[in-house]
Image 1 (cartoon, rainbow, N blue to C red):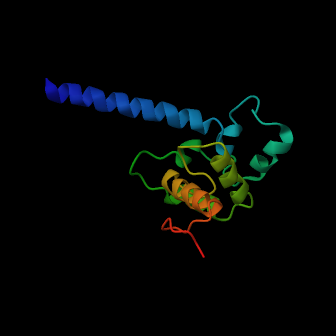
Image 2: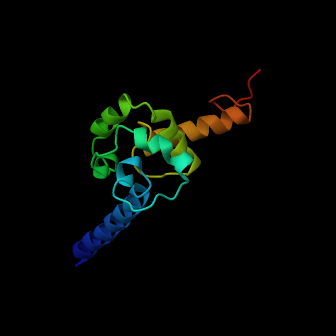
Image 3: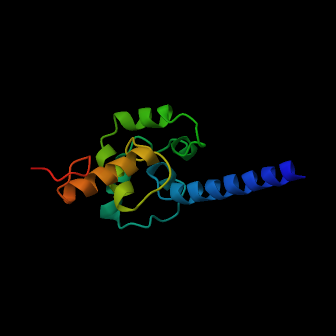
Length: 129
């Protein structure tokens, strides 16, 4: 029986992560075409209309843990609103998916580096001269 409860526990964790990814996906440019009304004002949303991912399956931008992000990043590579998308994700604390061509881990590193720069610290945490 312990093996069965571990499987049920793993399924519960996977289900929770999938629900969180779906919630995050609701705000992604790729998912906007499936929504009735956007949450942002039209002037804040204009970059979405120019995104390369508009019309692309949103699931591509929310890969399973350990799955490749290459295809999603390839869509982002030549996107004219890539920076706006990345800034949107950073300012809204998006924890899941590919935004502006960056994964969750890459965005976390960028946030950390920006926070250190604001405090006048280098990447090692030492004050810069």
